[in-house]
Length: 306
Image 1 (cartoon, rainbow, N blue to C red):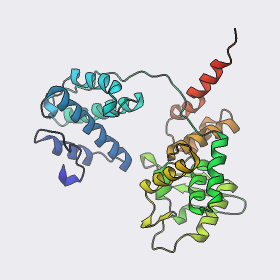
Image 2: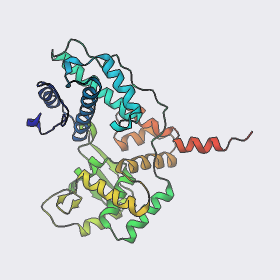
Image 3: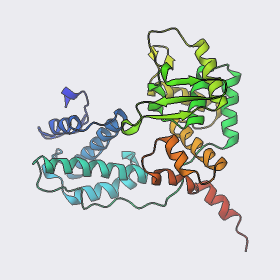
Image 4: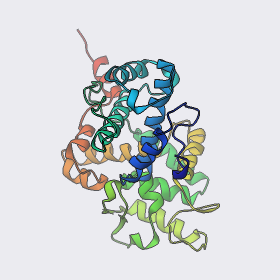
């Protein structure tokens, strides 16, 4: 595993073959960088849990259906593993099912111990977004600080609903900024899909203002940090900075959710259009924004009067 540069089993006792099997699994699957990171994290969590629960080094040949089921049930309750969210537990199960399925195909295991284990059921709720007043607070604080780069970044996230990976990969030739219209082309979207998204006037103005003061560097990337092209980590650090300033917990995907909610609020029923903008292959993924958030359900219940 050291050869791949991904020490997924750090501090976890494992058998001698496990690191090479994980490395081979990753090599044979063309995972995006964020997906690769998530897969490694899921496998590390399961290996660590297996070692602690069974008091033996992790070995794929020793994993049983009971192990996977117990991991599912205990990780939902055990905060120390930081796997408490239902969606995160289910993602771990998908990773395990895929990894052990690959081991079966490759002849390393006779059966897939994760296949019979069902995912946790959960109520379908819409992802939470920012309220209009919170968006206004964020954009005001950015303007007060004359932070043109932050204005361009937050505007792009709020007006296109792009992922942070789309944003940091954006290059100068991907932008079209005209007086009457404009667009951003995200060439390396999730699943290697390319899409072109219209840019409303407010986003075009914010981007144009930033580009006029953009550092002159030897890079075509739109957003530049102190040490070169801005990274995923840099965008998240910017969100953390303005979280502290505004008193609102911010992260890039929250702004993507905010855009989705606002789009449907202004364009009721336009799920197909929203799916195109967000880069969703499956309309069912987009349909979750039609559901109500937990806060909306709570407000509706408060209005009950007998």
